[in-house]
Image (spheres, rainbow, N blue to C red):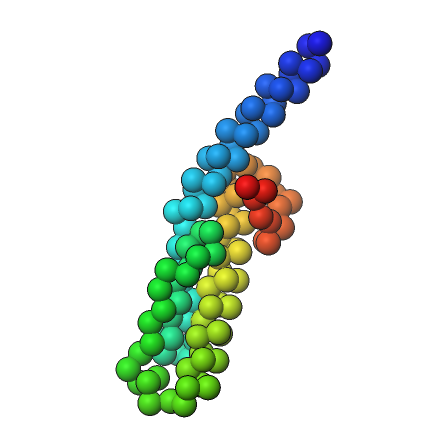
Length: 106
């Protein structure tokens, strides 16, 4: 029975660490840009979009160009968030083999 108790103890510790990781990740924000900063997108740690800003100079462009810049800025932010998330997971867990696109199960 000691092995089972030890296993439960380790599972509880892992659960606590995962909660800590979630709290750290929730605080992350990254900014993606496109078109020489004509468009900026801010994503939060859970990949929720916080804001989009379009520079006045971009507003003279065709809608298709602005749409492409928004998509590019979002993709830039998403890649930065993947990297930042991986770095933060490394700090909290000490694990070095987590992939950039690691997602929490909750």
